[in-house]
Length: 239
Image (tube, rainbow, N blue to C red; front, side, top):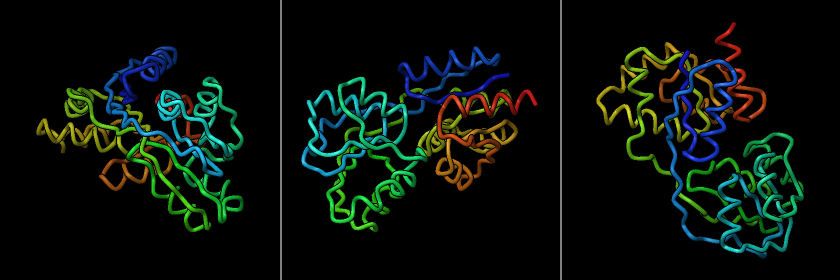
C-alpha cells in the first residue's frame, strides 16, 4: 500500500515517513511546499500575537522577535516550538484551526491590536473573523510557500493507478499536486487515480479546497494533526 505524503523536506517529512513505515505502509514522499523567508519580523507592541506554524516561530526567533503582549499558538506543535525557543504561550484554542482562534479571541480582542504572523497563504477566516470581532488586525508575512522544483512524482503514480492513499495537510498541497500534474499533461488521469485512492485531508478547510477542485475526500480526522490524519487513513485502508 503506497501512501503519498506532501510535507516540506525537513524533519516534518522525515517524521511523516517514519510514522507511515511504523504503520506498515509504503511512504511516497513528494514535498509540495518549500519555505521562502521574507525577512520580516512580527510587531512587538501588539496586545495579542498569533503564530500559526513551527516555521513561523523559527523565523520570528531568528529575527530576535520580543513580544510585549500575549502570545497565541494555533496548536500544540506551534506551542511546543514557541516554548522551545524561550517564548511563553499564553493562549491556545480548543480547536486548532483559524476558526478556533477566532472563537478564542473574539471576546478578548475587541479594541485591541492583534498581530497575525504567518505565511502568505494564511486563511482569511482568521483575519476577517478578528476584524468582525472589533480587533485592530495587523498581518506580517514571515514566509512564502512555493512548490519545489521537481515535485509531482505522486501525480505520476496516481495517473498510473499506483497510489493507495494520499495525505493532504493544507489547501496549498492540494493545489500544488494538481498543478504538478497539469505541468506533466496528466491532470485528468492523476485526478482519476487520486479519486480511486483513499484521500485524507487534515481539516475542513483543506477538504473544502480539495472537493472544490474535484478531489473526492474520504477521511478528515477529528483532530487537525498529521499523526491523527495518517492513523485515520491507514485504519481506513486496513478496514
